[in-house]
Image (cartoon, rainbow over all chains, first blue to last red):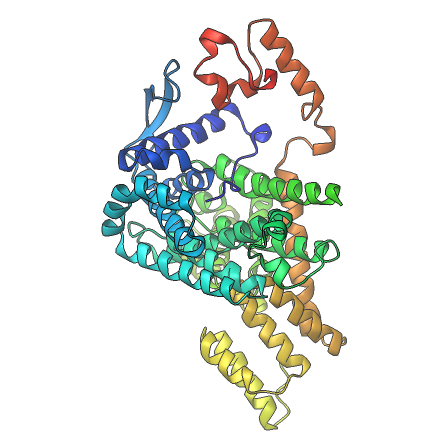
Length: 280
Length: 240
């Protein structure tokens, strides 16, 4: 994905930051077990998913000090044997692969074909393990491409496709409680929607140059004039994500998750809006 | 469940602390924060639990019951019902008109209430575009998470009928929830961004200094770049 969902480090306690890093490291290792190439595309968004899903079970996280290729001299704490981390790793590989497949089909991009070649084995295994998720992602990516083809003007509608993907990813099979599932799916929807829109907003100039699809260009909105409206709508999306997060029964990792939802996301949004404001 | 746990307080806390915790929780799960939200029912369950817990604690402390929770729960149920009915009476629909368009709108409202959005959308598409049409279509968009569209529609409804309290309220709540999140987000921070001297230059110069001194104390040395190589090279991202 895009790495928009991240912590805001300056406001984290070191101990909480270490928790975040241990999950990040654990996720990277799990992804590596599936496909080494996918480790390169590891994103913070999936770390958030691992942290969140792991927070719903009350077992304390098991960590181990380990070295790896990227950090050969300094051993780091890494979360091991956590099904949330394993799940996030599976989804990370699957999503990366399907996204590449989608790019390859749409743009006939050589890079995407090469990437697919590396990810193919790992992704095939995960897709067999998660048929429901894989179908859903494919379906929504196809819907997104068809909306792009007709140059869809509605930002809500295009964002809906990506939001639906995250909605699916946020609700793994191993979570049984019906209320928790509903809450997670709404949280996923809102986070997905936010990621898609903020990404489209950040890429506006680039897409204008390369003539790629961007809902803001097609809707022909003057984004400097509608900036406030857009900012409100995005903040409302975050508010909905936050209010669903509040309903979850969080057993651990609370400080990190709150940092991401209340400060990390908001800060990212503010900095992207500021950047664009300065360009003008 | 232990009522003290529900409120997140300890048995030794005084009444004032418990009251404060209770108020904070009620504010957190307040029905206004979950209006036109698919999770509204879960939030109202939470509120109910919180009310029950608070009622039980107040009863226990008033010395009214020593025979376990039974009495307390009975009491609290009425308390929760009170709270609940107060908030679910939000709809201010005028039933006095008998005309067919009106009844159709009423039908759409009940469809939305029972969660049948596809049908609601279908019925709505055949109706004339009055202020109420825009309002209801806004509510439908809200439930799906299409906030840009929702805001536009509800704003349109308010523009067409500025005196209608229901439409105005929906728009206000949307804005209030946005502002509340902003406030919350600001409140979670320990330092406001304006006062954060470490943000820019000072932070850089500090870490440069400490790197030059050969002993890296800056937090950023937990960064991916130097964690692995730090013991050998003392490289910090800020030096590059």
